[in-house]
Image 1 (cartoon, protein in one colour):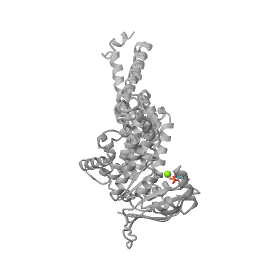
Image 2 (cartoon, rainbow over the protein chains, first blue to last red):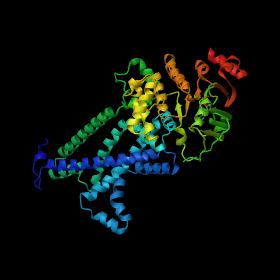
Image 3 (cartoon, chains in turn orange, green):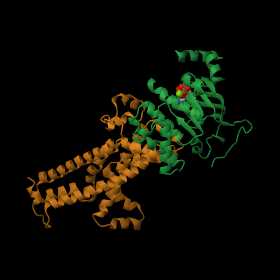
Image 4 (spheres, protein in one colour):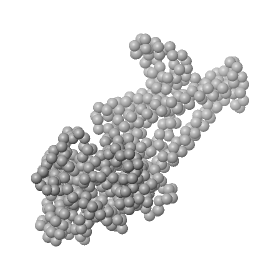
Amino acid sequence: MFAVLFEPTADGQRYIDWLLSGLGWTLALAFFGWWIAFAVGIVVGIGRTVQNRAFAALARLYVEVFRNIPVLVQMFLWYFVLPEILPTTLGNAIKQIPPPWGSFFPALICLGLYTAARIAEQVRAGIEALPKGQTEAASALGLSPYLTYRHIIVPQALRLIVPSLTSEVMGIYKNTSVALTIGLMELTAQARQISEATFQTFTAFGAATLIYLALALIAYQGMALIDRAVRIPGTARTDDDIAPNLAEDIQQAGALPAGMEIAK
Amino acid sequence: MVQQTVVDETRRPPAIVAVEGVVKRFGRFTALNDINLSVRAGEKIVLCGPSGSGKSTLIRCINHIETHDSGRIVVDGVELTDRMGDINTVRREVGMVFQSFNLFPHLSIVENCMLAPMKVRGLSRAQAHERARGFLRKVRIHDQADKYPGQLSGGQQQRVAIARALCMQPKIMLFDEPTSALDPEMVKEVLDIMVELARDGMTMVCVTHEMGFAREVADRVVFMDHGAIVEEADPETFFRAPRTERARDFLGQIIH
Ligand SMILES: Nc1ncnc2c1ncn2[C@@H]1O[C@H](COP(=O)(O)OP(=O)(O)O)[C@@H](O)[C@H]1O
Ligand SMILES: [Mg+2]
């Protein structure tokens, strides 16, 4: 059924090469978009929890704006609208960026900033789930608010939210398909092109579907590995170096909120 | 740097903590009502009183985890105000041990003890490590240094919390019911450490209902009720002949 993928195309390649090229753009967009999203998401998520009113309000505004506008609309805003509202020379320079980069960069920024808003909310939830005693103990030791976030709050909050970040990882690479609307030849766009060239619609989209599924599985497994790697010793039920009779004290310690249990 | 306001030069030894007319409200509820308390260097004070009487609030005000609404608190010569430059210059001199331990679960035992000395006191990793080892030995838990808090019993965790505070080499140690969350068989191991600390001359303010401990180390017992200090006496007097009805009721309850 997938034999058609190995037939030669008009430009001397095979259809599977089109798919692989599409996969490459999808992965590039998801990968680099993720790091933008992660970096911005942490900063904004922290911003949602700080005492400074102005900073917290800005972070809130960011989240509400980027989370509530549909990705497709954001894609159009970055691609079509941004060059128009910038000064003419800058706007023209952006329009001159040759393909595929002229589509790739707006798509990258769009997905990065959209996903950042979602990650920010996860980070905030992770921070708010930590017991108040953690901040108090840090303050009592003379750690400044910055040091407390840096060494106590953020490291614990990030561990807590690894499972919910898994769905954000999956989300960003699924959303890469929206980039086809601004002309990026990523996986879905290539599948459509194959379908149009060969009239084998089922094969073309079937292959793309299988690739998306494989990516989902890889992302899921990868995040599960990370979850295990960053797990705090002594917090896992399966950890056999905790004597059973200590379980109660560990609970009492309130070391980690119930969320950590789910995190496993 | 923080303005140094020296108080009580005349008295000897000088008060290292001076609480004068302190009022603390939570909304319309008055948690501390005109508290006056002075702690001299080397003194050991036991704070007791019924639940909700304001003991935790008082010691949390002393290291500014809670901010007081009026009155003055002077710690180690520095008055605590909202406008003060850097509260952390005071906090690093004041160690605190919490009822619920509050160890950092993602750091190993020795890292729990090294973090603040490195980041706040500016010690090198090697210096901080050596100091942490020393205090962990003092609380008899050095063989667990590379474990994580979640792998220790409650009593062990509380001893680590004491070591962590001591690693900052504070001038004062505050304890907020350090043994209340512990199983009975673990209370003694923590109290033993606190007694040793007292013998070493540490200035201590302890909220505790462990009357044996109070008898053994306290210079003064301060009894609080409804946000006010009701009675202040040496332990022998307080336990044998409490002056107020409320203190008698309270002692009657905790002894049985
Ligand atoms: N953050 C807070 N918000 C509102 N009320 C509080 C807060 N902290 C303490 N209180 C109230 O202040 C009173 C004194 O509390 P606390 O100092 O914890 O008492 P104690 O330690 O003596 O049991 C209690 O009635 C308590 O409910
Ligand atoms: Mg209390």
